[in-house]
Image (cartoon, rainbow, N blue to C red; front, side, top):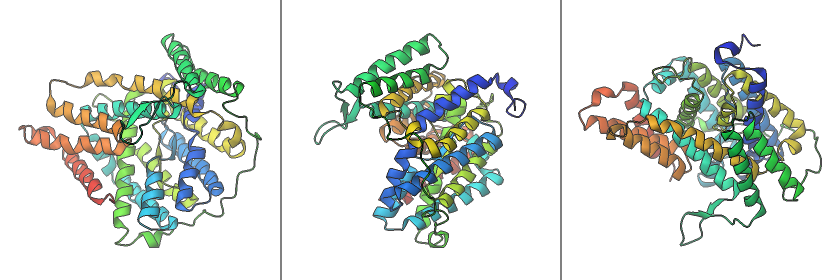
Length: 433
């Protein structure tokens, strides 16, 4: 096992990798509840969707663990699931079966491009400043999610600012603030398992104070998958009218995957001296296979999860971390009420702390070079301010190449970067209004 996952090369231990896997799972276990709630808006039965979500997450993460051997967890992507449910189905009027068919087609395209080496070629064309922007932007994005989940930052009312400070008198907010300070102190003192200790402490206090109720049961049989298993409509999605839908799903998932893999790998020190992830084809193929498997099971686009950063911060460096996450997802088929008891104000503070870790690479951007700074700045800020990783990435890619062109430095732009810029423009053109 140690040889297979190259423990010695990464300085890994079973204890550290296991702790990292548990931490990652706890920060993303919300998807077990949230994804079925979102997909229900598309007409998919919540009970069947819960089983589909867990199986898609477990299988996708297992492929990432055993094939790619990276510490990245995989699950149905937030953002893509909302696009399928609210835009493709509710606004555009397609059935959820056709929508899942479009996701499957996008996954097939992913796999083909990965086999041909095109996805890795495109990923390696991204300049270091944008790769740093991906890592830092994901950090701020996670921070914003965490602040919102804890209730410390909430949506502003009509006529007011877009966001505002939450009600600090709420017990959940107070637990979040105290939990955050505990976690920060533990991190500063370099205590192993500080993130999971802080999250579990906040959960325990929340239960004791009656804010988080205990589940009615701890063990349950998984709901039947029959209503959604293999119910996708590939033929219905393989039409000219549905092409924009397939295109948007493809580009969104492609950009999310590239940004997430590079951002997480930078934080885990897995990039080489050129800023590339060695063997990136394997995690990309794992992602492509996960995207194909998810709609077969009855859920939306799956991919590498940014919450994997939680495990990476706890020292996860190999596929064994992902193996632990996959095992916990499989266990959740029977222990879902227990494993999803961690409240938002407990796992939210983990995301805030991770954001502090991931902002560090910004110091490596050349602030004196506007052709590098401005695209990175747009990437970082728009990821958080638009609540969308893909939008931030596309903004950076669209501005990078023209800035180099009109400042007489076009030779610094790799051919693949022009392709990415065109794909980014295509996303905005094809995106349904």
